[in-house]
Length: 316
Ligand code: TMP
Ligand code: ASP
Image 1 (cartoon, rainbow, N blue to C red):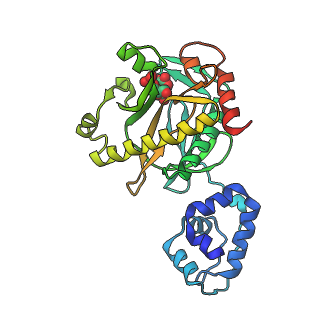
Image 2 (tube, rainbow, N blue to C red; image 1 turned 90 degrees about the vertical axis):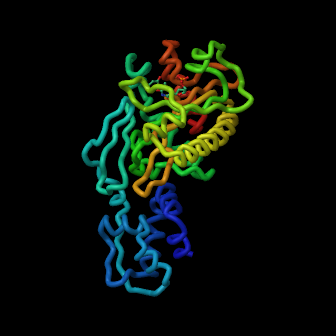
Image 3 (cartoon, rainbow, N blue to C red; image 1 turned 135 degrees about the vertical axis):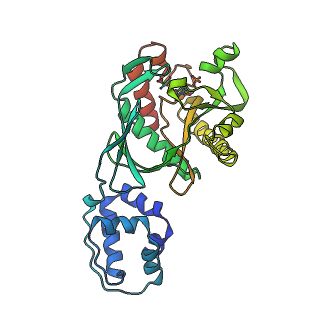
């Protein structure tokens, strides 16, 4: 049973770590009693990382079910990633290196901007809410078969994620007219579409993220045709999952923005965040705005709206 779990999937092990550290500690201890890697003593952080990363050698070792003698002392605290140098600072998040080249730590700030950084402010507590909510959404999406960059939440504001190169496209899905759609086409907000729409903008602050179509993206080598097809399919799937989910919280998912990344092995995964910063969320009964539009439009009640969404998503 232990063997099956270990070779089963990386996620399965990570799930156990997240849910119950004591249980995992006991679980690994049992593994240790049962299997011993050839000639080795586990105990260092590197070894544990290898175990979680499922190196082919270790996999073979567990699959072989041979009974090696072993010692393994695991301090669960050792699983905590070391935060190294800052790699990047964006408008709402910072990104730090770790001692694993394939993993980085994102750190969510309370800073808020709008209109390409022209309007600046602080939304107290936003960093915590956006971190916790994004992680909740990413885990829900993973369960529904959407690959994401999420690995493990480390603290209220920090999350360990796979290192990706961000595809320079902001992918926007809309179910209801609002924001720039309403403005561009001269229609009121709140028109429910028969089908969701998708659009891309080129992620470039200097140019103000101009709207672009798939041909433009290919011409600029922002993504390949195949990558765009993958991204489109994933974005619509995300919409279906999220629309249904928010409905159960008495919230309408009006529109949202996604970003995708490419892992070292070229796989496209959902990245960035899913939060009231990047979604338009209206209360289903009152149509009250529960998202960043309250900040963009100086409506007041900004913190309260973020807290209300957090309460509905996390039940607190
Ligand atoms: P828009 O109507 O202003 O184009 O916004 C569409 C959605 O994208 C909305 O849910 C807010 C989100 N969004 C971002 O996440 N970042 C941005 O920079 C912009 C302009 C919009
Ligand atoms: N975050 C974007 C910016 O600074 C815009 C927005 O979310 O409205 O400008």
